[in-house]
Image 1 (cartoon, rainbow, N blue to C red):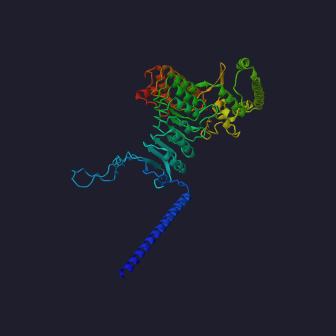
Image 2 (cartoon, one colour):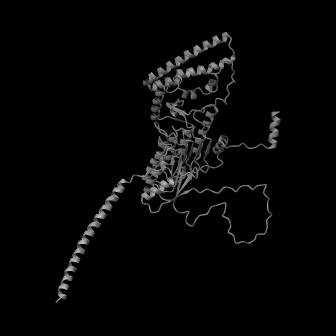
Length: 556
């Protein structure tokens, strides 16, 4: 009897303990849920508090941090660009040379090679970002970036958007075969415009469907050298590049070297590039070798190199520029003015203004003659004559409305040397100020301000003489195109011989080998003979002793 109530009490206690456990479990679940919501809320708050990363200029640190934030699992390493080991130092003559002895076998390891470097297995094929540092100890002195053979997609472009502009000394970007697309190319062009010291861009082996490489060489671009080899550029891309080089109203003023080797450019595309050289006086080196260029494009290049007729749009733009400068449109003889009056009777106002200026210049020249006679009567010597001649030339140019830029072209030799010496003292002779003290400064003026000549109703101006190196080898140029190029070179040499160098020196190197003409063609041999002496690296052949003795005998 005594055991039953104890069992009953034990049952009640078990029930109570079970209910307590259930209640405690519910409370524990509520607490756990509250902790989870609290932790999620705090994590959300901390994500909101995180600020965007600001680059410090240390490319390796910035690049690694941004890749981690972007959640990239495999990050290409930033490594210094490998260089070929330098030559070993010459032996010291003071050191004693030990006699060679028979090799003694030893268990020591051989020293590492000095003519090449080795790397781990498959390390060469792993994606890397190669950098060049101006100072190896300074991580913020990165000057060049090289990426080879791995795809630079949108994630990496977003990272480079922040890294590249922060590198103040970056001047070269070389992306070879990185799989650029239209979108990534456009974004890369935007990044390049933000890099203040970027001067060299190489995108070889990146065929882009839209061929929007012209975005890199706009009117405000600061890129000096650009290479687009093996990018499968067609006539569509060549047209865009040609228009980026220059039009009647805009022109690129920074690009000096352009490499378009091994593309798919035909005559039509090459003609667009040649048209881009009409108003461009900045490009110095152009290479379009190994394409599909024929005689039509070669004729266009020959025309641009010699002289060409302005289009209607260029004539209109020329008149706008001349009206702003206050100079006459073109210097014409009375016969040409009468011929033009029959064709265009509505332009009499501009001709009348020109006639008035010519009349003023005539009065000025007659006044100068009277002054000269008075000076001769007073007994002034011959040393004072040359001092007045450039002044008369300058006054004539000023009466015609020419600016200082145009005087360089029109006065030519008259203002060269004499104008500088006219400011000397009266007691000094003509040789008191030498050429070395005041060197000539060649000003490259606007092509539309070049001295023009009207022939058969067309306005002709001198062609492009700023280009000094043209490579059109390994194409399909025949005899007709070769003759046109030869004609353009002869015209440039004639202008240089006459002393007209305000527009540049003209071509110094022309590569036309391996085209559709024989190597012993007469025009090709003549072209080689002309260009040989214009090459800046040309060295005349040394004379034999017999030739030297013959020349001395003839001289004596």
